[in-house]
Length: 80
Image (cartoon, rainbow, N blue to C red; front, side, top):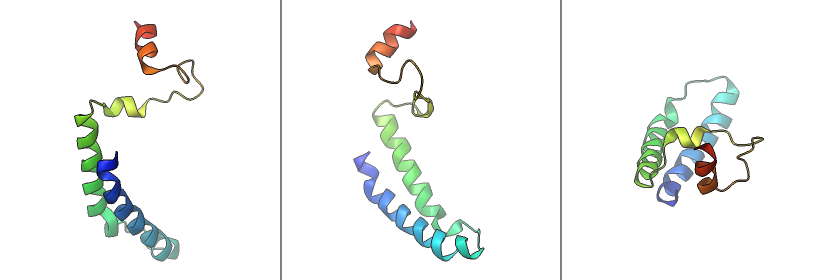
């Protein structure tokens, strides 16, 4: 999702500052990076939609299953 890479970097930088300078010192208020996360998440969702990737497809755990090393085109044929 290269379209969102700059947003990810901005969010990651903010999160690292929040985590090290706030959270580890007892401040669990995560509002500091909330807007950046919101924008980044919207970008990822838009990019996924444009590429016909369903969120549910991204959440499927294939590790340790018989579909782990099978190309998606073969998985579709196997499940029918």
